[in-house]
Image 1 (cartoon, rainbow, N blue to C red):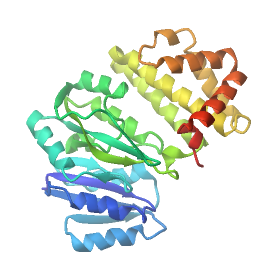
Image 2 (cartoon, rainbow, N blue to C red; image 1 turned 90 degrees about the horizontal axis):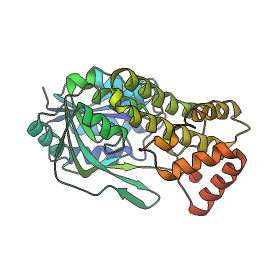
Image 3 (cartoon, helix red, strand yellow; image 1 turned 45 degrees about the vertical axis):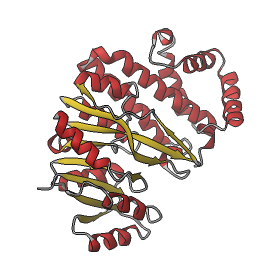
Image 4 (cartoon, rainbow, N blue to C red; image 1 turned 90 degrees about the vertical axis):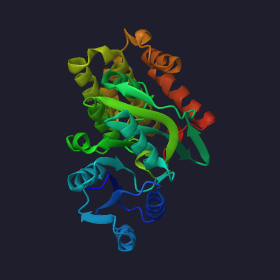
Length: 328
C-alpha cells in the first residue's frame, strides 16, 4: 500500500495539465500514486495523461464518460489505495514540499485531516494569508468553527485525509462541492492539523466556473449553505451563528450575481433569493461573523432594491471587482 493517493479530475485541461502533473512529480515526498481521472475530455487531455503514465509507473489514468468534477473525484476515491488521500485540480500547481509537509504534520499530530495554506493567483495578482510555520491542532468543534469562519479554506485541495474518512463521504454537485465535502469531513474528523504555510497554488482563470456569470447551476451554492445550516441546527447548534453568517453571505453573493447578469431574465431566482434574505432582516445586526459592509449592503437592498442595483453596478465598475469581471 502506498502512503498517499493523489486524485486529479481532468476535463479539457490540455493547456494546463502538464504543469499540474509536473508539479506533482516534483514532490519531495515520493511514496504516492497519482490517479488522473479523465472525465470525458474532448481535447488532448487524455493523451497528455497517457504520456506521463508511460513515463512513471506511479500514475494511473482512468477514463470515463463526462459526469462532472464530483463524480470524477468519487471515481478516484473508489480506486485509491493510499493510507492518505489528497486532491488537486487539473489546472493548479503545488510547491515541491507540499505533501511532505502535510504528511509530516499528519503523522506528528495524529490528525485525520492535515491542512496547509493557499496562494490565489488571478489576473496577475497574488493573494494569501499571512504565512505561519506553526502547526495548530483543532478538535472537531474548533475545526468546524475555523471552516465556517474562513480560517480554513473551503477547498478540498490543500488538504490530505485519512483514507477511511475520505472514502466514507462522496462529493456531490458541481458548485461549492468542495465546501460541502469538507464540511462533512470535518464534522466527522476527531483532529485536524493546520499550518498556514501556503503550498497550494489556486489559479483562477477567466473561463473557470468560479468566474462565470450567473446561471441556474449557481443556485447550488445556496442549496449547499442551507444544507450546512440545517445540519448545524440539528447536530452542532453551538456553530449556528457561524452557519447563519455563511448562509447569509452565500445568498448576498448570489443576489449580486443575478443583478449583474439580468434580474429580468432570472426573476424567479431573484425572488427566491430575496425571500430567503428577507428572513435575516430582524437579526442581521446580531450576525457577528458578517462584515459591516455586507450588513450595510443588505440594509440598502431591503430599503430600496433599485438603488441597491445602481450602487452595485457602479461599485463593480469603478473598483473593477471580481464580481464585475465575470466572463460567462
